[in-house]
Length: 239
Image 1 (cartoon, one colour):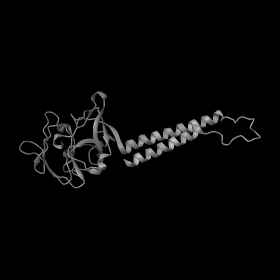
Image 2 (cartoon, rainbow, N blue to C red):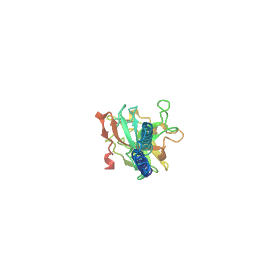
Image 3 (cartoon, rainbow, N blue to C red):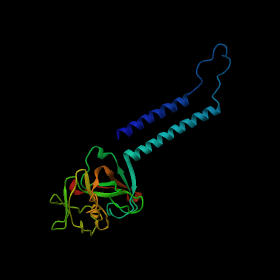
Image 4 (cartoon, one colour):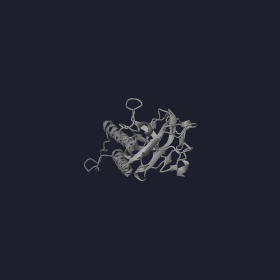
């Protein structure tokens, strides 16, 4: 993040300096005694046009660098094609994922994350390798399903998922008992009956665990359509 800010700041200074230089440029020097009677010649139209084009090119370059830096380092918008995260996020909505906070804090249980699932999760359509799921298991934890009340447990303690589970869904109809390896995550969709998540890859190479470095960012809010705009809140057990 600091790199982006520094780059943008440098770009802004250079743009401002170069634009000022061009717009303020005039023929240097004063008329001598020999040519004092002749007024200084104004810049030609071609010179002024050239300066304007240079300024515009510099401003465009700065804008492109800023936009690219924002997408790569700060935040990005992702489209949601499926219903695996309902009711938190619905098909056709777009979410804003920020890429900054995980440089300063650890991923936490309950976070809704965007991640690169290539080679781990099957592509729902060719080329679709980016997924959105909720973090349920953290490195080193034992995640099981289910206790006598049908709830997912973390190291033996039941997890209250009523904040985000799709209405009518059980926490899981798939039984599992896994230990999350170091550096990896156990991820599940909120619409459990319609989500191909870590549970779907039990017994497969990698076991459905997602490396932490595959996380692109944390989903902050729904930004489209505008009428559905809302923040993606942390679950009650995080408050």
